[in-house]
Amino acid sequence: MTNPTTFDERYRAISSRDARFDGQFVTAVRSTGIYCRPSCPARTPKEANVTFYPTSAAAHEAGYRACKRCLPEAAPGSPEWDVRSDTAARAMRLIADGVVEREGVDGLAQHLGYSSRHLTRLLTAELGAGPLALARAHRAHTARMLLVGTDLSITDAAFSAGFASVRQFNDTIREVFDMTPGALRARRREHADATPGLIELTLPYREPFDAAGLFQWMAARAIVGTEEATATSYSRVIALPGGPAWMRLTLSGSRLALAARLTSLSDLRVLVARVRRLFDLDADPQAIDAALAMVPLAAPLVAARPGIRVPGAMSGDEMLIRAMIGQQISVPAARTHLTRLTEELGEMTDVGPQPARLFPTMRAIADHGTTVLRGPAARTRAIVEVARRLADGELELSSGDDSAEQRGALLALPGVGPWTADYVRMRVVGDPDITLPGDVAVRAGARVIGAPDDPAGFTAWAEQFAPWRSYLTAHLWRASAAPQPSSENLSASSPKTAKEASE
Image (cartoon, rainbow, N blue to C red; front, side, top):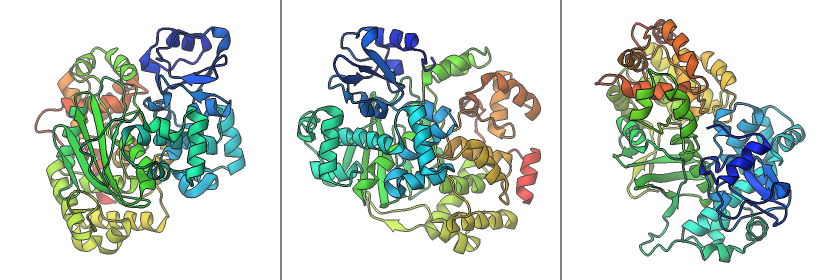
């Protein structure tokens, strides 16, 4: 399945009420003044009355309001923003992370390398709405989640969604949903056993969803005292812009529930965006699985694990440090090193159900890493230097980075070679088309299925899976023989390994 782009393709999708396309575009109906998700159960409108928009923000700007029946804001996000690497997609990832609320349109434009005026023109031409309207649509979506899915007061919901005032919140809800906040609140689930201070939401995703594989991945790499994972849940503490936060993601049946405690309620939409990226919840698994299964050697992998996801990252800085520490050692050894680092340098927080340690700040690692880190002196120096550059702002990593530019910036760092750079951008940017030919587990998985396992041969063979090679990588990690080598380490015989170890 690919995102339909022509009018006829999209009209066929809404005529069949195909839920696979929910979140990929919206249908605005001129005769009613509303917009819907493709799977809306209402009668299919006449073609002459239909306009398709790439985002709900564009429909808002054109004067339409959200359908009260299908609630298009409750659909999973568009997978396009993860697949595409252009300015519009990078902007959407940063807007979801709350950059406009924290830094304004000027800050967003600076991240993307444009003037605010040019960025507004570009996004309006591409997406039908400028950055302020796109950010407003995200706030409206978050507000709907809070009003329908939590017991937060309307005032708390307003500020948690990122609105600057209750009046602005009320006006936006009425304009977008043609309902008052109180009317939306009347639709909420009852929480008879609600815990004070605990926010609970349900996160939408597309089926199939290999949640078990993600929880298993997280459990193997969980930093003791910071993260915890079981067969059906994952929890951790993390520093967000407004202060420490705790989150727990739990799968119960087909419901993916997020529980959170925040220092600042305004961080909620940031947390939701990062959790969605961590668990790759906006992916289009049917399109990915169909493409991978076209290659006979990979078809059994897809059949065994439909809906596989590529783990993302909740912090680019943290991900880079974890990858550098995990080079050339096993998953358990990397976990031991990271746990020691966090125990020594991480700050305690009581934001969650019990006290826990935050992953160390880059400043703490830069100032004290040499006394805590173990292993080759060259690697320790490299990690400390990278932490210093991150702490001083000389290097910035975010989901809104251009993938190729981020790779170049990473390769310029001491101790960072191609494997580390590619692994980081796979997880931080969410690049769906990354191969790791020097990775031990990838090559072991290739041997298991009878594919070439030498770096050059594997790279050539994997080209047929573009643009979904990151998902092939995830399948090969799973297919590798037990005990699985670290997906966060390198082959001792890989030429890249020697290079990274010596830098």
